[in-house]
Length: 256
Image (cartoon, rainbow, N blue to C red; front, side):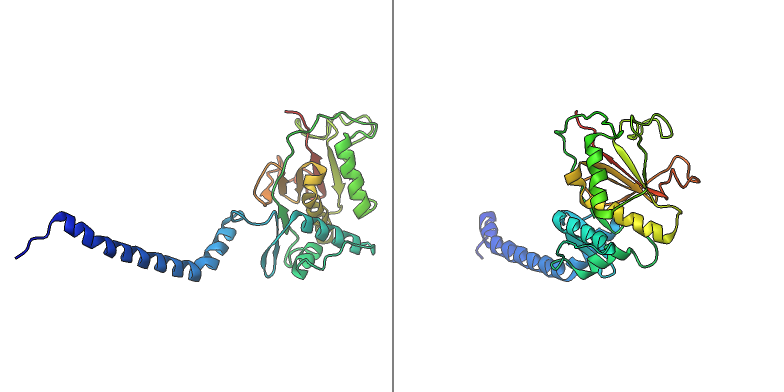
């Protein structure tokens, strides 16, 4: 009987290993096709966007919809202007479910519906207070909100600057923050506040916005995840400190 050397056995097993590898690849590919949508859905539900998703997202009754930053700006601006009976940007290319969610909020309870990835500029100059009590960047945010939302109940700044009434490290003291009030705290006012908050987040990159805080939630330009986080107020029993009655927006300081 002829003997088979180790070298012969190696040559004979290579086609077998190749065939086995191809079969495994085929099985994995089939599994991903069948389970892929479910896996992606689970990742979204677990918190945070999947890598490679859109700059902005809106959670609708039909699921999460991705938007470009331009689309998010168009949607939030159009909804705000239409509510005032004014001409609005063309939104023909934006999912109707997105516009409905931005305009009406979640069906059960007011809350965050739109978020964008943070994008904090790192080449800004430090700015000083102007006569308004705001830095030029904060003043630009104030004026931009006025153009879209009209007259608003604003606070958190006074000519010459504020020196008390806020936390020790508050951006109000150096004129970088504006508060937009929605009083009293009602479901209708909460939905109106969320429209402003969503508009600010959509325009954050253009306006050098750093933080938006409202209704126990906050958004940060320093976060690359398109999400709202839970805001931990120093006094959970105080609706002002929890930002239930006002939207807080502040701008980047600049410098290193």
